[in-house]
Image (cartoon, rainbow, N blue to C red; front, side, top):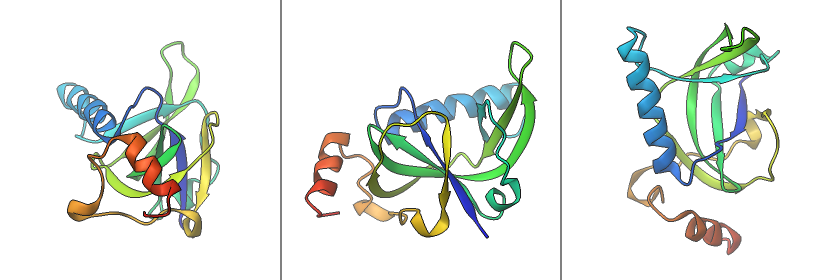
Length: 144
């Protein structure tokens, strides 16, 4: 059974700023001779690893809205700079816009059941380039 993660994208203003950050991470990995994949390191290792690797994604919350996702490829045990155990979430670098879904702030990451995950948006109507406030207002009005 597929399971997803949801995570706040701290510091991101939009899908575009998250995309730029992820491109930078991929460039750094390539410069080290590592695969051209995005990596996010988190303190806790998910106990539901098999369900996450069965087609799971990480859904990014930006400014109170879950608005995009990356497909999870692997979860690897790693160490932080100060030597503590951590989890490297390895993802495909392509961001996929989803139907904006309001989310309250939370710390760390949370599991997201497949049936609760927002649908993907595609094509010119994805709203990817809309300002976050306009996107949020469209959701509030029920237009999206």
